[in-house]
Length: 511
Image 1 (cartoon, rainbow, N blue to C red):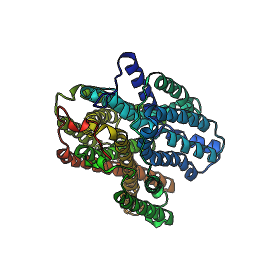
Image 2: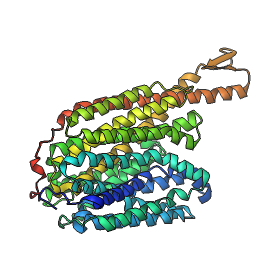
Image 3: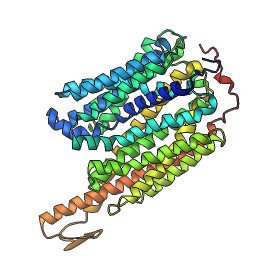
Image 4: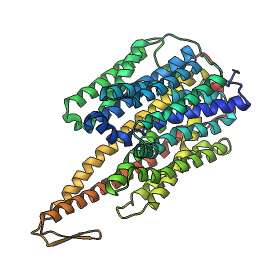
């Protein structure tokens, strides 16, 4: 490793490390969504209720959220290569165990193990790509990394629907086995070991942070199901998260070597980029959470078809990241990010014009435009976040960066789902309050005319009103996300353009 923290990797070794890391990254990000479409089949096979099946998703998210903050310390203590190999091995084995599960407790436990094992894959792959590439190629490296991070959640529903329909739900987990084996062999064969030097472990600080994050994830995942603060469980989870976070902040401010080093938050670009990626995570994953149920429930698309309609969004992201990877260093990064945010806002504005009678073209077109926008944002934002960060803080920095993106996505998904349910009920009540057989003998919605003389027709009318009410609620969510996207643009002023020779990238003392 040279004085700038870059590893000397060239030729085939560089290629093999990059491919192996991206395989592991795609594998982990894919599993965030691939199991969602298989839940109905798994529910029947495991004889579980819908509420119980929610734990198959929740256990994975909570485990990943708890273990993610620990990644930086583990990599510094034991070396990135060793932690990456153990993470890939654990993720692959737990995937096989998930596929072999025959009871609900088994698959919930193995999904927890899967989430805990895979937590380190995304931040460490990002840190390694920074180190094996010189600074002038960081934009291209982040373009490759960004493709892996964003393509997984987008392709997950499509791939999961195909595997579940044509084979069985077990294959949404078994598909990880060859990918994990290939990634593990590639990392073992070509990646050099790195170690930043061990430091004291703030066990109490980690426990406080883990409890806060775990309780917060439970609060978000189960809040809608339990009617939020009308439930004692949700109140306890919210209080536990807040109290643990307060204790963590007080503890970190009163000891010499806290779990998250204060030097991490002295870098202006890093702090600003984390705030922006928090909001971007909410927008990106909230969109991915809204479109599949809109297409399947309101427009009657099968799961596989909805996945294929959404797939061009991933193509747009890949194109955007490849193009912007070549633009880094030639065009001011803040201008690139601002252009990407404008593209994203334009796509969301177009999404506010969706209707139940439209074809597939508007979904495909807006997906491509929004994918391009996200591609233009994520690459320069990731580059600016770490350009001025000392090499000693890179493991912790990438870990915290990904943690903020994940927390943003969790909050975004919970907010849009809560607003969707509330707005659907409000609009439905407003529409049906004047629909009775005594007002008119016929009632027209869109191209359909209903004779209100029979109960069967009234029931059909209610279902139609329900679909229109839900669609209006979806459009309100898209409008909210557009406004949030536009509100991010002024935050770019807090990012500082990278200097030609960033002084803070020197290996300096940060204790």
